[in-house]
Amino acid sequence: MSTPAAQVAKITKTLVDRMQPPEAGQVFFRDAELKGFAVRITANGAKAFIVEKRIEGQVKRLTLGRYPELTVEQARKEAHKLLGKIASGANPIADKQKAALQATTLTDAFAAFLNARKALKPRTLYDYQRVMTVAFPDWQKKPIAAITKDMVAKRHLKLGKDHGEAYANLAMRFLRALFNFSIAQYEDSKGQALLRENPVIRLNQTRAWYRVERRQSVIKPHQLADWYKAVKSLKDDQLHASSALIADYLMFILFTGLRKQEAASLTWEAVDLQHRTLTVTDTKNREPLTLPITDFLDAILTDRLAARQSEYVFPGPGKTGFLIEPKRQIKKVREASGVDFTLHDLRRTYITVAESLDISAYALKRLVNHKMHNDVTAGYIVSDVERLREPMKRISDFLKQACLRGWGNSVQSCRNYP
Image (tube, rainbow, N blue to C red):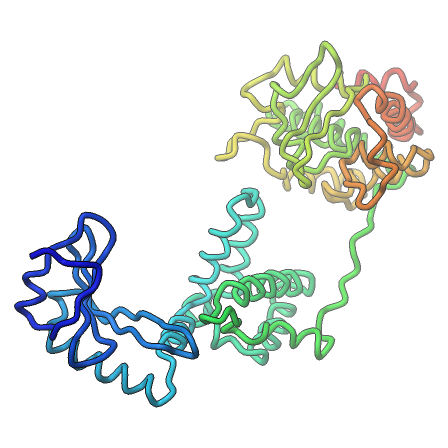
């Protein structure tokens, strides 16, 4: 039988069985006895029972179930119940949305969070997943709506004792971001948030955030000679093949100011020894950075090229293919030099030296790839690589002099460090 866009008749099994799909779209048979009860058939032949009713001023359509999984008799009974609830003022759509939220776990919310942020860097993704695993292992299957402010306060305190105050703050900042996302993600039919409040706000309300001073440590100029000597001893280590590479890596970070992964993931394709430039494409602020190669860096890169093993300047044995933070060798340098440092301290040292030399603020920001927010003047300055050669040379010369102080060597010999 042909079916018009909509027909009215008593819905029976015989009627539903005889319904033929339209060539396109969908058609409806509305029940002649129970107003609001209908059956829908689509172009692919799928049949489903529905209820249509005005809810809070708008006509809404709710699906009861598909035929034949749901019989006509069962569908009619369900329609009676639903229409009765609506008549008494209930909103089944809102109830369904709230029920879905009650079933949404922290893991579900995290999956939606990651799906919305497809451009996350691998390291950021790893850090997020690690926080979920370490900080909230027992909350994974807990509905997000069941995570309270009291729970947050207690977990923050526990994390501070077990993993340190800085980590506790980090974990809660992540959880706060996840809840802010969920508040925006899960809404009712009117666009109102189903989650009313971010439970991490308790830490603000009670001023319970740990006060963690930002690390400001650098290698002071008078410490650089001992530090350099300890790094040089790695270079001379004949027992461990990777020691020379790691020595070069440490010096490379100090003399470029790059972040540890920016330096470690540098590829030979991005190094131009002929024109003496190197380019970092995967930076923290996603803006590529091209730096000039100084004499000191040229010596390191030439040495690395002679020992080339892969596409990376500083190759490593892991899945990434490039060097991961060499903690054992860093510890060895610390012990030999008496200088307690981290890889990021090398970047801070580079920046501190540059500032002490009165390097132009614009040149310095370009050298370390810091964005110049709301700076109109900066938009008119083109800091190409050639304009960075002179300030980078000044920084390099200062570092070389500091590294050799007390050695009785000339600055020229430091250029041939490798």
